[in-house]
Length: 122
Image 1 (tube, one colour):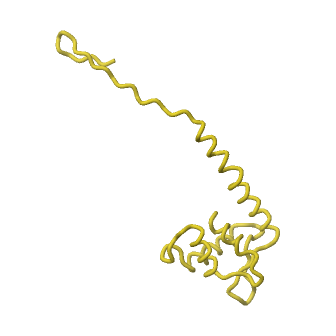
Image 2 (tube, rainbow, N blue to C red):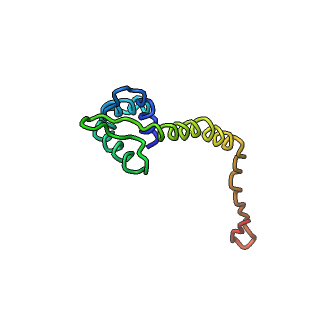
Image 3 (cartoon, rainbow, N blue to C red):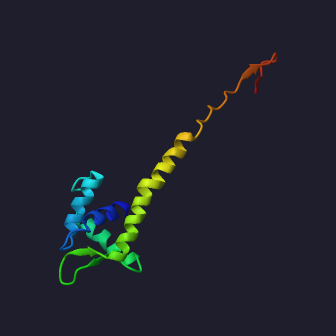
């Protein structure tokens, strides 16, 4: 859904709205997928999920057309969430991963043979 939201944000400035085909094309360019991997039917399904999941919908269908547009109130919130994720959370997580100390290899078990022929594990 993150890539769908990013694609919708990039198409939000369209004066006449956007279609599911345009959303699919935008998402394919963002995610480097082929047309077989993500097509207009999948984009229409994702738009339907976006419309249904929120109390105040992020995307609404333009009446008597096959086009969609974003709502202004949710557009600000979605933009803030995506910017927060890309510019704050991802760099913090990357920095935390870089500071982690590497694990030591598991110590090998030494085996000594006793005089009676049995092995002793340490």
